[in-house]
Image (cartoon, rainbow, N blue to C red; front, side):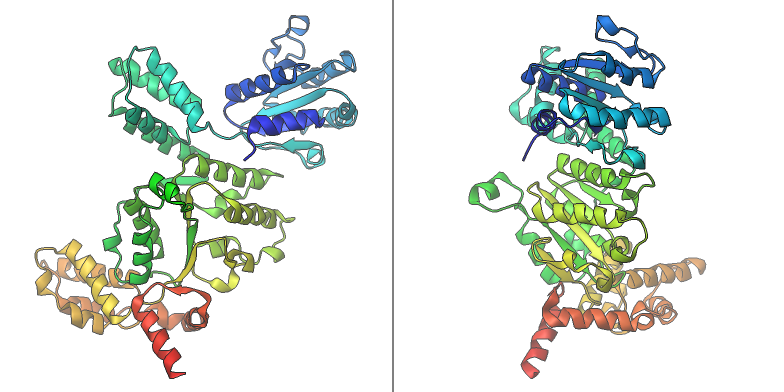
Length: 505
């Protein structure tokens, strides 16, 4: 995989005049640019910001102070053959100005034949439509494990403390996905607190990570406390997951196994798809990131594509991890007919390409309720390891679901409930509807100052109209689609029914 330094150096040598680097790590990005410039050997660095103007060159000290157009005019004053990299901090704020925009387009023509490049560093992408053709966006990834290790060792070295290799690796793993500035801040706080870095400080780093992810407003760091045993039924799916429990280990790599890619879980609402995503993360001891695809879309030109790349970079920086995408069908339904100038198609294209080509240990768990609205490219082999159909629970599985919930709600009085009867009397109920039935029964018992009973549960069930009856056509379509061999059945009982039907045919 090509690194930032390699890609940036290639753009400089190819005379790309205007380069846009979206990152909040301004200092680290500038250091990387300086490193590349030193390798090329013929590029001076010019640093500008609105408050101070140009700062690091005595011949132009303060030039362009509070004057972005004057900052660009410096390029006219330099000899044609003089090499230079002009780093403009926060310059995206001035791109809507007609004089600045026109000047940049004029420079873009001229600089194609000169060893000069204009670099805009900003925490977000904000490029007016008239400048989209002249700017090239290059992603600046979060620090690698090597960079994190070097920085942590530097900070620890200032205390005279010696960390074991195991503890050092644990710190590095916990810091993955954070900027160097955040890592320095949290570890400096720990050192200031007790003079050294202790094992308890890992939780400080993880909390900083949760805060950092929340601030992106794209991904959520989701707590995963659910266990595989909390899932009632879905035996085929659980067996598949348990078999891959060690697939992210070094032993699996030495064996020659590739990283698992992900799962697409298809079925009606309330059948345990989201619960499965949480249980996978808990069972595999991996962080769970939840993506709301709607957050990827922004109103500015290029913003949606930039957010998609930011999401991918963040997920890969935090790997190994679980990326949970709930109801992906709603985000990408009817992408060809959406009147958004192709933004949805471009976001989908970036995402689907990553799904097919990713090498990082990011296990994607996507859920969908309506398979009809998903683009066919999403279902092609290679995007996911497997597509599972999660149907309505059988009577045996409803027993398991009632048992899971009642064991949690009334562990000491479980024998008081007729679970077999409850499962028999709730045909076509989903797991979520069973849970709602129990909650309603608890309200009945609580309102009468007593514990709830089997009869209360049955009374509650009689008042609920399950989704299986209100959405019969959609459910029948999903069943037919799964029975046609388009997906693997998550439940063992459904697999047996498919086999019996095949024998009868």
